[in-house]
Image (cartoon, rainbow, N blue to C red; front, top):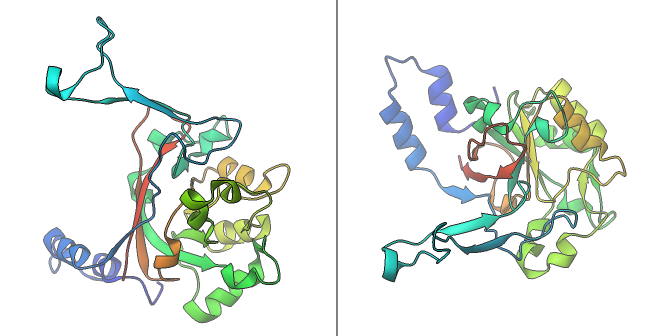
Length: 260
């Protein structure tokens, strides 16, 4: 077990039920600092050109076609039209795999995981589009210990800083990403559960080899993450969830970190 896992996980793994209650665990959770890892999205949010922008309008009465208003109806609500892969979102395996899990089938226990963050921003001086390598992971482990089994691995590139301020730069190609070798090492050798990154894609290859491999191996990923610069390299916990759409192929997600 990773030496920097937060108190919440240490309590749940090392204490007996007789010694620790959910109330005790909740007190630990509530005493910690939280970091939102999710972008706010809107009709102007960066999105892959093949999908197009979302539209949002006042929902209307289907009989009169008049919008609901606080003044007239006492409530208001919005009609959303957008692709599932919009904003900070989940890619379930079924996004790329006919036999993969849909978003409603991903186990609840995979929605709260130890979080590790690989920061490759110091490498951009030599290579602004660096892809994380196995050597990078081993260097990280020399400082922080072995990546714990079951972890959620996030890639910090600081691309999220361009999300609102410079969306054209955010959508640049190529961009800093994952290498397939690093992805396979993390899942096959370190037995992680899922990954996430700040970009809209996992890698910059023509065949999307890393993203294709992950999803066809029945793993999920979170794309367009935010604020990874505010999370430590190890020791935090990530909580990530999404609506339970039947047979869903992707949807905006809400992710946050609980700091150690």
